[in-house]
Image 1 (cartoon, one colour):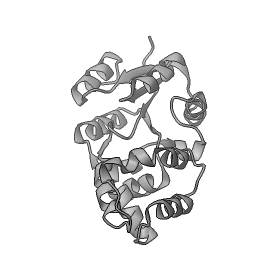
Image 2 (cartoon, helix red, strand yellow; image 1 turned 30 degrees about the vertical axis):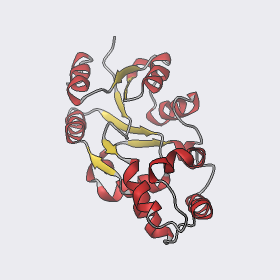
Image 3 (tube, helix red, strand yellow; image 1 turned 180 degrees about the vertical axis):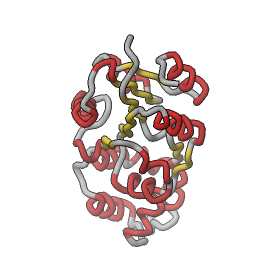
Image 4 (cartoon, one colour; image 1 turned 120 degrees about the vertical axis):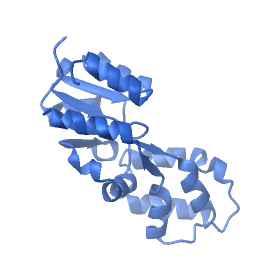
Length: 202
């Protein structure tokens, strides 16, 4: 198979790790109602899904959380609590730098939301070094919906085996493979690096 022309990276659990329990503890500590932080995001999963689909704005998401929990902080405080849950995964960030050094175009391809992206853009310098970005909240579709894959193909001007795509979720990888993309199920930095080497990218 031909060498890919572009590489698409999932964001969460690939380039950055995250822990929603950090946000849950901080948010519930500021709620007038007694709320179990361990169940916070499970309870609000439908609302979070709508937020990541762009069906509600950040302001509407904040207001809905306030109404449901009696959160007593400001929107800025909520945004800080909600989004400050990420840590960089250095081996994959370095891998991206290597691919860029070899002249490959790279993209971030993520199910995510506006608060998370605003925080990551401010916090992590590597984020600005990609050629383009496809986010679920901007596209109105979440992986593995075909529409968001089509959006990446349109942005990159590539399709089929011209695209290499790595993600930690099997169903998302499978949707890419079904389109003829060359895919990598990210399980560890070492395995991903070996897979990219096998594709002739390293």
